[in-house]
Amino acid sequence: MEITKLEPEKRQGLVVVLTGNGKGKTSSAMGMVLRAAGHGMRICVIQFMKGDIYSGEWDGVKLLGEQVDFNVTGKGFCGIQGNPYPHSEHRKNAQDAVKLVHEKMMSNKFDLLVLDEINNALQLTLVDLNQVLEIMEKRPDHLHLVMTGRDAHPQVIDAADTVSQVNEIKHAYRKDIEPQPGIDY
Image 1 (tube, one colour):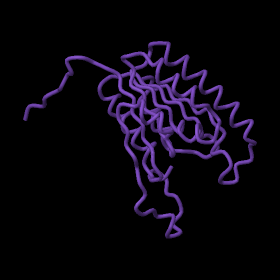
Image 2: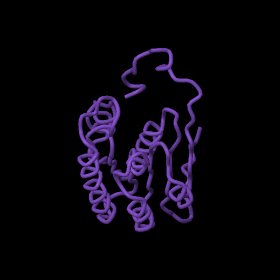
Image 3: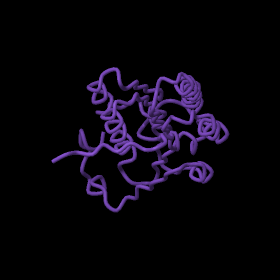
Image 4: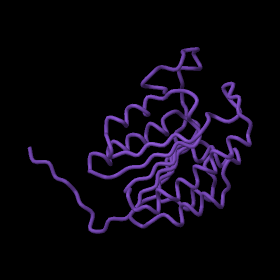
């Protein structure tokens, strides 16, 4: 069987927002990372909130080698799961992450930029709406931008090209099943 490889007439970067209260937003973004790697694209991932609890994607993307630049900038989820850091420290880290986003974006080294949990960072006032909208506006035309996290701001949703909402129907933790490696983290 012959496999057809599609090529668009015009390449254009897209802004994709993955939001909602269900599980799978980061997992979906990591699927896009894998897909982009398969197309030989160069990828940068910046995680805004994660950082205090191990997650399998940290080592998983290492298997893709230098094709993926992976950056964990957070100190964990602000205000939950016993996270000991004050809001001010979380905000400082998120502000440093915004600077890193601009550096990576303007370097022209990447085809896909994933901003994991930036929607949460915005909702928690670790970053400001004008900062997020500026990232979207200043994004080079060729760069795909994927932004994950619950509670995406309506203006972010309006400015995006594609928005998917992940809704929880059922989750194992509601049956007192502990988070499972490779599935939940």
